[in-house]
Length: 405
Image (cartoon, rainbow, N blue to C red; front, side, top):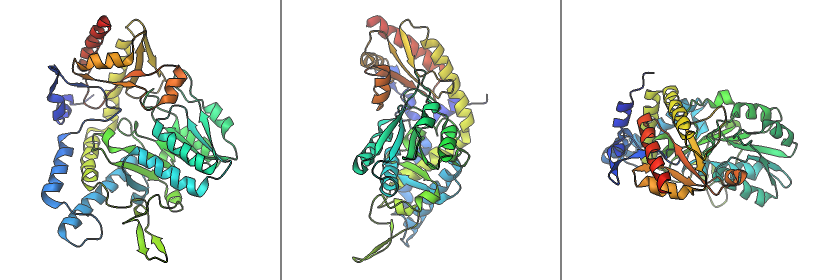
């Protein structure tokens, strides 16, 4: 495979430093990825040359910023193969994207006695917003379980869909188990019953190609900061047929057409859902991250990360008392594990002293921990810049930590 890892790593100056006198090894990419120089330079370029508030203004600075901002919308349209650029809505992150749909779709379409199906492996941000709307509407959350290997039980889903089901919410990739869910099958099943599907793609779009038209997704959400872009920016893709009918989520500037004290008329999509001044700087810098991923090739990134996943999994399985959570046949570059009688937090604290960043705890997925009856796990997650050499150093450090404990 033609994958210039040294060139890629050179784009990320943060990786060149030492932590506690050890070279930094960053294995917490599922939480947030590091930022390349292209993103940092894009932010600097904006503020040094053409920062201005976007849309409506007549002066050069605002006009230039507006053009750059809207160009990123088009890049995202092409990145996920959306049919229309107006189906791309900017938010603060995946969490706000979920809240937008839960509130707006829920306001129009969910009534007392209705049901919302949510999978057991969801991040809290794809559970709690649906619980809130269900509480307001006296609707019910119906759980879609997964097997001990980390696979959603699609036979159970078919049985739980009924006339009361109004929407299904499911992750494309689990942030704990790494499972790549069969979302295309889920969507096809749901659509056969005229039920829309919300896909949380926060752990998917940086690892594998996504085509929302091929999936036939109704809604698809993700965050820039997990894709080597800035934090504070997210994307909601929604089919026009839904977005046109859904009421605004927030009120303010930009989302209006005309305002009077007698009546307000709303703007067209996507602006109907983009109230107020957006995160202009971060959206424009996000475009540089998308460019880097396009240049590298998502398929190349995915193959590289799959090799890392396979290599690390085989190494971890050599350790006595090792338990890996999530061993579905189709899996992304996340490994969650525990080691018998050792608390994950102790491992995380000690391994940090050796310059290695991992995540410990429940990973904002309490129902997954409850499924396995564990308080938390150690999670390592890989990005486009990680290497097998880093995995070897991690294994050496892990063995030292286990000897201490």
